[in-house]
Length: 339
Image (cartoon, rainbow, N blue to C red; front, side, top):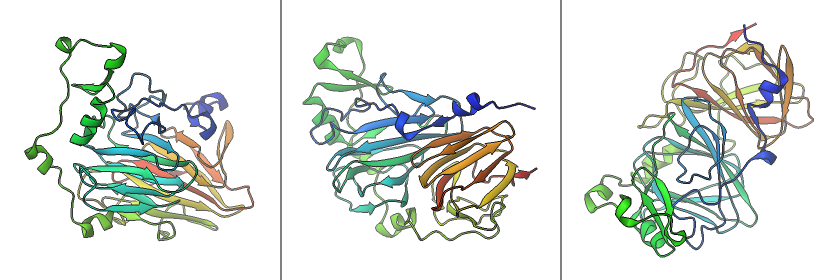
């Protein structure tokens, strides 16, 4: 049996205050309106196009965890992904515009809301209200591929000396980083390719959002108990740990489940082990995670990767509710094993 020391578990904890941002992660880095955004890669390789991107936890989980932090008015340009992209709003109000030129409507989301944007369609995101906001994101698969940019993004980036090499490497021509003859560049999509990334109807997109407070606790959850609720957010299929499909089910693969775990003051989940990757992101309050050799107290904005098979317990020792989002690997997580 592996003994996880306090130091080893602390290495799996990424505190909000310790997040290392990248300000040059993507093709639109120098585009007016996008210059102040910060990109974070918390778990996995992510989709950053910059060699400057710091990766906090490199271990493969079957999915990637990232984040974005942006001030009022800051824009992340229109792009498409080949795997699932899920947004959890930690703070601020945000707009997700759709279509290559933002012509296909938008969804507005706020703190505690979750939106899973379908693959192979253009989306962006922009901060709507004053102050700085933070988005927690989940990308499907160990290798989520690279970003596909809308044509207008290439045009705007070129005006500021940025090019994208095949394979997704960002090049700043203003710094003389390359010779055109030596690099094959990525180009804007043609009309046929754009047509393949058409935005789904509005009624379909409405199936991709769960607003804070709309989650329904699952009394059949193996974690449910006195003062403890676990609600399904993303479940593509019925799971072995007693969750039914939905409310976000998706017609595209996710490869993971997402839950909302709430503990009232003093509530406790006894020692149990999971058989798949488990990542906790604290939305509100604090959460104590303990195991036989130690304990960690997570605060709002912190992310913890729990080792597969490690018996661990949860407790809320604070005077306010503890609310966390939990990402569980695979589309049908197994029943936990209680000590």
